[in-house]
Length: 406
Image (cartoon, helix red, strand yellow):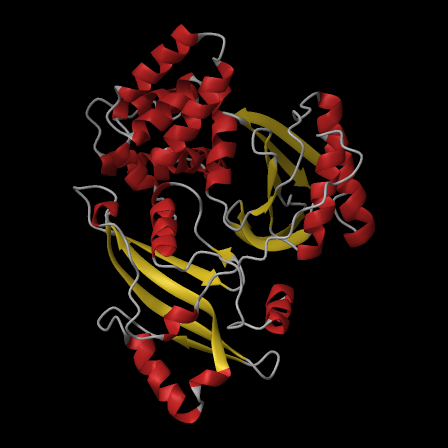
């Protein structure tokens, strides 16, 4: 779940000494005595700054805020480890300096102020960690990724060559390459369609045309021979993008065949009111409830029933609703193709349980990531017999084709 940013709360989280350094470097708030200034006083001085000046700094402060968490700190350490690979003493000193600070907010601010050479790569890694719905392709030969500028530019041109003739966008594209542990990250930013959105400029409301970038992220593992791709667009672009990566970065003559993975999530148990998910008490998972069920017809393509209910007081509210539906529509005519769940997970002993909402969709889609708490929830699905397995006659193949297309 995204953390909520506000400038005043950010001022509370970061020591005044670090804020003084930040604002001093920008030549603002010189009249504020940061030794004694309270948050409200500092915020009042902040509001007196010109809009343009404040907006530019607010964007930076928000980025620092986003990095002020465990995942942000890990990303900073990963980028520093790569850049200081040949200077082990410097790396140890860097880790010790940041570890000695009071919290992740301080670590993010110190990294931004004192180690800007690590900042861009770290923010890219953090962003990638937060992206859902990755597409993995295996069966690549275990060859190293080419990270020379000519190859990186070649990937940018290949992306342009796909999108511009097909969709009349991506006339320009920039690709950035980073190394993180044993994986190579490539962040591509093709030019998107021109847009006009309402915005405030110099205190006036207006619409100004601009050309944003959309994003394609490739993560390649030479060790695994696998490529993870994140692209929020049409499904038909996935394989062409994988192919362009294979030829420009891996120097392969063509995209290797991808052995078909026929495993699917078994969502059948969720039809039962008494089905309970299995998890280790030491995992921190306190409670998991079903908040949504989507049922698809076995006999008429496209017919679906979606049930959602408030489970705050009644954890079985969805099943109460399902029992009402069954009176009019026999349940055996439908099968479960999507389940929404809400889990309460303790992530820190001194904090209340964190609510995590996620969904599982037939045949093999899950919104959970592959790190942190999400891995514990994936382990729960495996222990409960829900994780992907070879399909049975319970779910018909023609329905699978329909769902994949949708």
